[in-house]
Length: 585
Image (tube, rainbow, N blue to C red; front, top):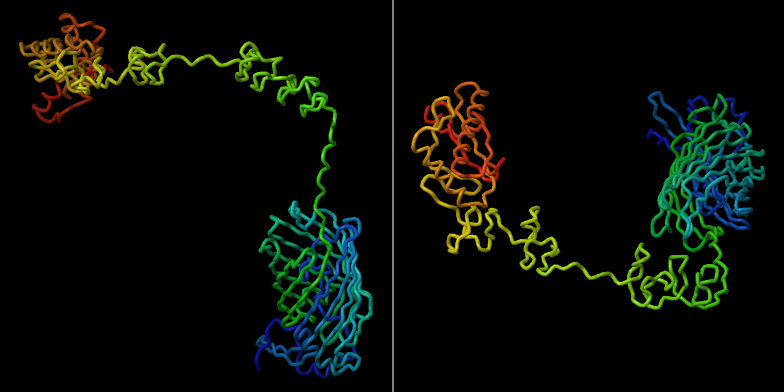
């Protein structure tokens, strides 16, 4: 046979022989419907929200609940499959009108009258008291109350819902229904509940109910009722300008006796999806559907819900009353006397309490009594001697280069900023030779001033040396005796004389670093000392020729800065050299 889906209402594992069981004597009717419509139209369909009605608020709601196969018997096979063998109740349609009333913004009282509008099924043939259920019967009238402990779940235009809301409530059922038609336990039932809601934003809600139902023990076949615990959780979002709430709800419970605790036949589990739309202020309509997820009686294969209702909206928070109008303004300047420093003389408003409302002849916002220049408008200052006075004229800058004349080395010609006071405010001179770039025929290489525009600022050229950028390049070598700082060879002195000529004719070159270099033969420390002494020997020669010693610095680098490989004699010869760097170290 085709296996039964796990969403059927009841699955007491009946063997085929159970049909003739003597347990039929214990069969008695009870309220099988596990769905209890919430009392307010803005609740979830199954899960109650902690906030009720405002003081003297009113609510009315009608809920339609259709359940398909809420109570069936199945046969369990050895392989674990299930086959539906009997529909005790195949279809059940409830209509439940309800009303609610709010007190003190905390307490909400409510009542509901469930009516089984239509019902069908085979009943329990073994027991005539619960045989085929009647089509239309009254259910157990439900009374209840809800108390808001903290928080408010209902948003208004000027108030978002509280992040956390907590409430408690209870239902009490009176035995007014037809027990033989599965609409009543035939005794009083009660269900205390704790309600919690978390709202991370005004668009997102998570609500939970935790409680238990006190009810008498009833039995039908292998299904037994009694006191039950349950947990219900709902979550959803508000869209369409907060008019539509879409969400899902899951309810799970179990009997609390040893014989029913966590048993599939007495542990109802049901899921719902729903949408609630706020049609107008306080008027709501909801549609939902779902299915059972266990075998307990009253857990249907499918359920459809429709609800419409109205609840009194929560009022907007009261606005703070406007401050009383003070009509004690003697000088009629719009500033009341207690805050007017000159209550008998009309004046403008001021942030200074000592001058607020006092006359201000020059209209500069500073009262005459504290204005150092009451007839001339001026800015407010912290100096009582200049407060309200016109500011002094700005410092002179004739060439408009942003450098004041008092600091400008070239006040009549626009220039640029410089750390050198002698160049600050002067036009650029990249090579620092004293010839402005605009007049310098060689702006990148320092040279003396000349009257010839073609050579003005160009480097001095000699037979054995010339200026290139930031170096005086020698065109031949300066030779020294082996392992000595003694200068040798006529050509060496001709080279140094050429360097002297350049320095002598280019006074704009203020500093030159004489560098000594060696090859890599010998010890490094010895070579560095030797290269330093050779640089000093060159300096001594140039100073003796007439160059100011303050213009010359020396350094010995030994073999640290080779310009050729030291593997050959030709390479080592190139590395033994003297270099002249303009600008110094």
